[in-house]
Image (tube, rainbow, N blue to C red):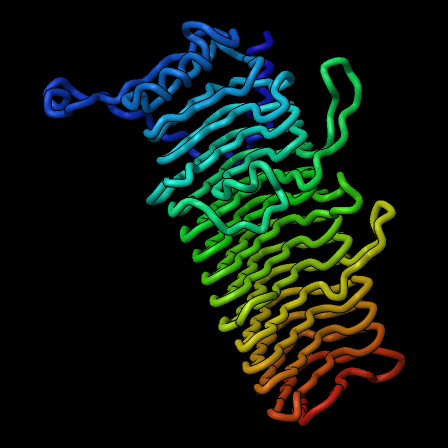
Length: 502
């Protein structure tokens, strides 16, 4: 009966977000086997004990010692395991662990429930990983790893961990000092793909074995990826439910010479960042420092009720920041919906490109759960050093926040180029849209159709530094009720030509 109940729970949680199961690896026929020097082996887990023949620990130990072991299958008759110490893997080969819907409990593992040293690839499927006093799954990339290290998780559930849900780490010093500023890491790139999975109650605290409460671990994220050195970080997240992460729902930190390629689809992130009042967390946090680009594509994602921002991105150094949001719904965050900062620190040399398509941003910058609102706009797009800011907003709604709508700010030697189509900015406490060219560049902005309506201070603000010229063209835009009168367009400073037609 217990086995049937666990199966039903899995079906309910993963319903609507599960993807087709990978077909079994075909058996190598005898003729092919003769031509193969070493035949990959599969180990079957048949025992639920912590150690000994047939257990998961024994299979992982054998896989660590024998590179011909490429697959571990857990027999469906084994429906739960409670290890006394972390489950480890240190092999050099690619390994797949097929969970068979098992639940692995970490009540006795204060460090990490799964502690995996991966040089090639690790795949985990169909498994609940629950209630460790530390990290749920820790994947450590050795310092001399090369090529691309792949981490794949499909139909997994992680819940109740005091530390990160999943940590993929390529920064050796981070393991002893989570606040390290080191950029040293393996030459390898990281490719992390998580699909059809659930993350809940990560980094929220817990209880010791005697029942005494344990505090939350600061900066514990549902998914945390650290990439150092010269490699890239490719992160693909699809069909996820992320609920109540103590700090960030997703955090990617790429340091050194490398790029971030982030793809997030058909997912929800709710109530992130409330565990540590002095360290409010975000829905998604992407940090790229050094010579590299940050590219993010978010499609059909809903986020709400985080203690800070829904999406916070920072790209510093030589490289561009490109952020595309499509069918994205962002609401009720204590700070801003989207913050994009290009050249936050460093020497500059990149552009910022922002697109918002068929999306809804509503009710952000709110006073939630006793945390005062700290945002300044639903969207902040800030190009700080020597690059161009390109903004494209299409068929989107930005409304009802304690602060502004979309703030575009371009500094230093670049242009500000904004095109707004069929979009509405309304009921914002201060401004609907800001267009500020503060450096040695030109402002070119055009808005067609849509409306800027009933905003508290002003509809649109435009600013042009004296070294350039600016233009703002409004075609068929509904302007009503802004400020205390008809404060629809305000030229803050500089030479900005405003052309308005019905």
